[in-house]
Image (cartoon, rainbow, N blue to C red):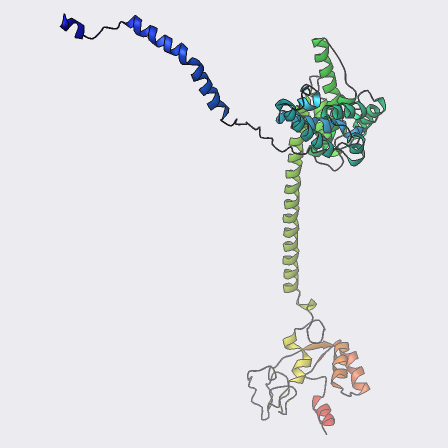
Amino acid sequence: MADKDDAPATVTAGELAAVLQAMDEKYRPLFDALSKLGGGSRPEVEVKEEVHPLQMPLVKLEGSESYASWAEHAETILVSRKLEGYILGTIEKPAEEGSKEGQKWKMTNALVRAWLLSSLSPQIAKQVERIKEASEIWRLLKGTYSGVGNEMLACRIQREVQELRQAEKSVVEYVSELKRLWSDLDYFDPVELECGKCIEKFNKWTERRRVRDFLNGLHRRFENRRAALYGNGNGKLPSLEQAISAIMSEETRLKLETVDSVEQSMVQKRSAFLAAGGENYQRTATSFQERKCFECGNPGHLKAACPLLIGAGAGRGRGQDWRGRGRGRSFDARGGGRGRGVHPPGRANTCTIVELTADELERWRQFKNLSLDVGQSSEAHGASSSANFSGTWDWKKDWDGEHA
């Protein structure tokens, strides 16, 4: 009997589960209290959204003329930052301003409002700077400056389209100006159509009209290509993109043609210059009588044979020069006496026969300040139109009279 009492009692699985469930029910309130106490002591982590700076639109709002471009740029920038709801009114102001959502809306609305005011001209900004909500500012500006339905403004734009000409602008500049006017005209004079086929036909009609506007305003240098586009044979105008592409190709061709013509003209001028220079050279080389002396300026001889230089550099050779003291009878140093007829080197001793006219002889006499008899001068004129120093002029007598 004693051995049976000392054996451990066996606990079944059901009894253990009942004990654990009882303990869980007993201590659950304590565990919940500890859990709440620990969770309340943890600081809440606030997730802040990063707000990127907004770039300014390329165009400022200065009136009805710039509203369409300004509104397009402004709305595009706000859409890229997911802030368009603050100007379109889709994000409403929370009822509780002190809540988390209310504070966020207030901060973002102030950011968009400040950005809108900075994109306006000073005159327009003064009109809306007291308004606190960005959506109200947007609505007021649209109603005042949108110009939709302004017939006078649409009429003025239509006239500008008709009067626009390319003039000296490039094709790209001309097309850019045209497309700006077309865009403004579509904005200020919209057409509302519900039928799909009607919209398609209207778009085709509008494109044909714009092709004609583009072609009619081109510079006259594109006349051939414009005529080809009008009369292409099928009775249909090309699309606007095809017409612009064709004219731009023609512009490139004309530029290349101009460069080639300029280069060809330069080559021709250079060839003509070289040809003229060669002709002058041949003419100078073959026409000796037209050459003028650089010393005295008279034609018919060169500086090396100029009588002025020969007379100025004369030596005292014996029978070697026409100004020497030898007894030679002629200028070729073949005379007798003590002159041996030798041709020593040097310009002063060079024996040369020079023929001069009567006028040239007279000028030479005046230069040397020589005095000749009137009768001798008359005989020289009557005898011949040219004088030879070997026999006509008594140089010895004049020399002795000059140096007596």
